[in-house]
Image (cartoon, rainbow, N blue to C red):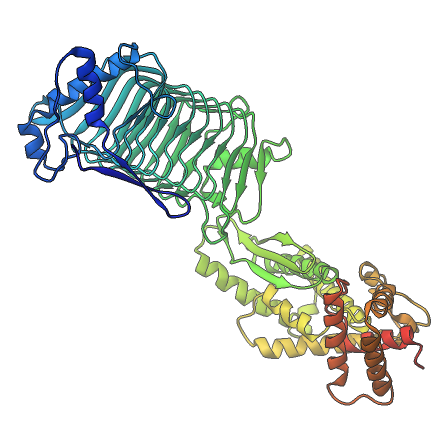
Length: 608
């Protein structure tokens, strides 16, 4: 009697133990053949299949018992032996230590050759250790499921001319390569979380159902899929490819996913066809997909689905494929999402927290700087906005110039400093009648227009000093940052004084601030009626939602401030109001000034 027990831990971390079944199988074989079989047991109480003593296994003729085991399976298959477990023909070979049954030169190997099982059978090989090369050839298991999960293969594994219903190699380790050729897997095939070293080669394989390679790691000298047909979805999510990767003559009739996969070497897709979506996406911006070059060899005759990209090193895609993808975005054959490094050199992403109404200022200023950079330095510069949310905007600069990133960032900082100081002196406006002179004047006008818009927003309560500081994150500055910031702040104050518009009854909404940008010779008298309708409505709604005690307390604070606010009390009032609004789900621009909120409360409460 074998002492081996297979231990399985369920989701509740409770253990279930399964004893060795080999003795029972051989007793059934003995009953059917009239022979008596007694499995050899080693000095630790393990049968010849579960024993870890390889020398002892050979001495006790493992090959003989191995052959008898498959005689038993054949008799079950043709119903000579009546056997069922859990309602079907399930065979438990879990934890078996497999050694060679034949020799090829000096090397032993385990051979499964020309086996044909026609009935529905389930073979459990979980946690088996294969000490020798495994060769499975010319086997037909049309209704059989083979579970090779949690196994360790110390030598090469080769599966050829195999037809099987299902196969699973989840969480198994192949230490000397895995080869599969001329095989048909009729239903799902799972290679989840495998570890493969050596060569990985699948050739002329048909997968009739879903295929799962996700979370597998390939430390391979060669990884190739050649002439493979995927009829259902294929999942390569979170795979790690540490060797060269080749897909050749593969047909993806359904979707394929490479989410969060790592390509640490060259990858090439050759003469393959894609009938549904193919996804290359990383959920983490710091872990870009495609660390090395990749060739997709795409054209109109092989691309019928859509290629999705997010957080990838897009520039590492071959130029011909990159152009194809960029040109076919409008045809729904390519979707290039956020975080894609599409350019040869680009700056780190800048994330700015700001309200939606002020994001237009950031966009306008960066485009102004982009033009100034090109006109002044002669080098190309682009800016791309990634995410535009209600409270945040993200952007980066890029160029296709052949330079290192360090030099690119140095240029950005140098010309950013020059832009903030522009014009340095009056000599910069001694223009000749040339195209470059006109361009330089345009750059000054575009920058000055932004300053005017900021001044108007400041007067209307939509801009404050912190917003101005954020602009210096958007356009880098290497030299005299604090001095240039103070100069820019003074420029805004000067423009505020020069806007002398008389406002008696003007309600300015976020998207309407620009109507004031070109007004000159006007005097602003900011009365309570100049407050935005949005703010008044929000405050009215807030007063309705406050408890009686909270409303009385808030009104008392406003009346005290109305008699002459002390330093800091106005900001304290703003903080309390915004906290109330957040608690009651009332949205209002966080950049709204304390004075605007105070004036709005005076209107709502009728305090003169």
